[in-house]
Image 1 (tube, rainbow, N blue to C red):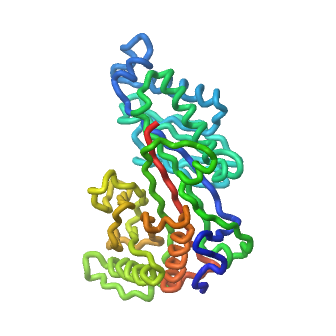
Image 2: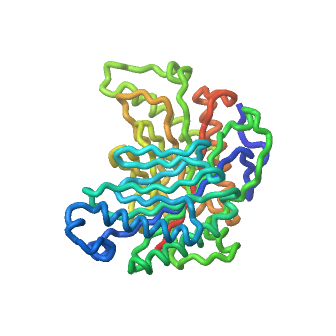
Image 3: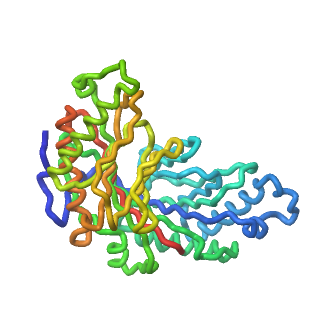
Length: 374
C-alpha cells in the first residue's frame, strides 16, 4: 500500500495522465411575471395556467443566441431541479425528483436539451453551459467569456436586468487515486491555481465581487473484508452506526497526521453538494434536502470538525468523503499542497479499510467553483 505520492512538491501535484477535466457554467435567472409578460404569446390565455408556450419561446430564443456565438452544448431547465455534470464516454442524462445528471465527453458529445413542464411554474430559469473540445481547463477563461457574451445578448433580447443573473463556474478534475497501481504510469503536473488567478493570467477580468470555494470529494468503497472486521449488534435500532463511526474515527486520525483539519463522511446514500456560506456569520452545517446532502462551509473562517451523516439502518457499499479547502490551504496561488494532503489522508485511510489499490477504485474529484453576478 503506497503511503504518499512519489512526485509532488509544495507548489505542484502530479496527477494521472488519465485525469478527466470538466467545466460547466450554471446560470440562475429569476422567473418573474414581467419576464413572462414579455415572452408569452400575444394570446395571453395560452399562458394563464400553462407555461408551455412561454418556456418553449424562451428556450428557442436562448438556443438561437447560443448558435450565434457557436455554443453547441447547452440546456434550458425550468423544473427547479439541480443539474450536475460528470465525464463519461457515453452521452446521456439521468433525471430524478430533484436532480438532472448530465454524462458526456467534452471532446465528443453535443448536448442540446430542454427540461420543463407547462403546468409547473419554476422559481428560476436555469441555463446550463457545457464545455466542449480538448484542453478544457486551459480554455476555461475563453469559455467563461463566451458564456458571458451569450448572457448579455440574451438579457438584451429579454429585457432582463443583468445584475439579477447569477453565474456559477464549476470546474473539476476526476481521477482514480490508485490509477498508477492499475498501470497508468504517466502523470501530469498541476499547480491547481485558483480560478481568478488563472483567469487574470489570461487577461479575463472578473467582477469585483466573486465568491470562491474549492473542495475534494472522494467516493470510497466499503469491501466485505472491512465490513466483516467490525462487530455489529443487531439488537440496536441502528446497527450499522458503529461501522460509520469507526470510518470517521480512522479518517480523523489520518487527517490529523497529514494536516487536514476538517472533513465530512456521508454514509446515507445521499449525494453531497457543497456550498459556500453567504457571509462570515453563517455557521457551517450539514443538512438533508430530500435526496441531497447539503454541506455549507465558510472558507474564510472554517470550523475544525469531522462531521458524520449516516443511516445506521442501512449498510452502504460506498461512502463519500468531503474535504473543503480554507484560505489557509491557498499557497503559491494554488491548491496543489491541499490536494496532496487530501491524497495522503485518503491513502492512509484506504490502508485502514483494507482497500486493494490494484483492484479497488477511490474516485477523486477536485472541485473549484466561483460565482458572481453578471
